Image (cartoon, rainbow, N blue to C red; front, side, top):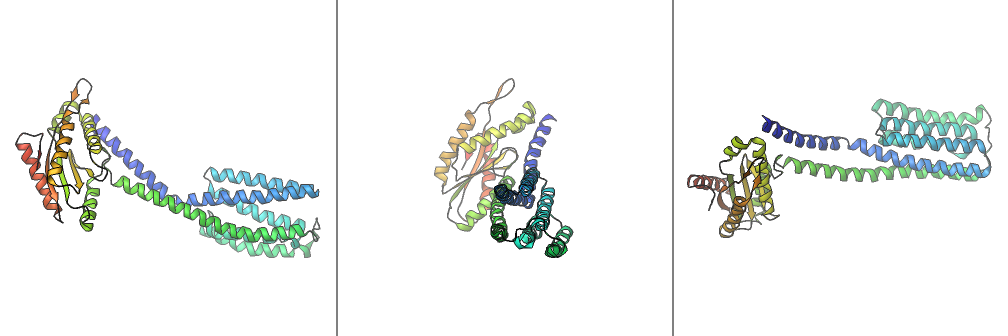
Length: 366
């Protein structure tokens, strides 16, 4: 029962890893929003830092305090976004832009172009930030109303600060709005490229994990079939030596030492096969205690020598157990894949393997 629990735990670990990959793949949109929002918050803070310096230099204390407060609010929004609460951070960012546009237009009037800051909120709201469909419609529909409301401000009341002849503010805000729209699109392009790279990496990780045997971390039967299909399709790596090997009397290991020790034996064997084959060779767990080796460009004569060396290394390996040591042997059957006769060669390898079992075990039959 303990051995079964260990094997289930190991399978659970692999399934848990796969789940993590799925979560990463499905969380890409959130990650892109987080990256995008972090960058534009930093850039908005930089704009307000310039304004704070300007107002401090010109002696307009109230507007210096307002700009400093804006930087503080953006800092909070940045921290909220970094914590993963992108929806809250998105609302904070949009409301900050709209509030800044309304308040500054109220203070300065429309001649300094701050009312067009609303345009900087339209693009990320409609395309990039974390709003649902209804929220997007409501926010976007409100923006033309806010622009027109600000255009009416001079007719409703006089502005507290007359900046009519301040060319710096007029050109600064006009260029910031134009530049901001370009930057928003550029940042989205950059983050999209980055997210695509992450998606490719996660997709590859998922593919790699789906092709691995959970216990031995060797390739599984599914990958082996793809490996041979590709080889047969290209024809470049033929001939290919195939060898099916099976652990001799593996049931006795499980019965004597328990299934957890049986799993350890499989892992040790897998590592031996991995270390004693080329990187271009295929080593996979075919099923149970059966392993399949594929050696591209290798004929029967060379393959026999290689497999005999591997068989001897396995025979000499000592696997520590609690109160003793375990030695195992393997029996194998070999064949050469030269055409699209994969099933036939696998059947031949299987027959030779069982021929070796019947004639005494611990041998490779070619």
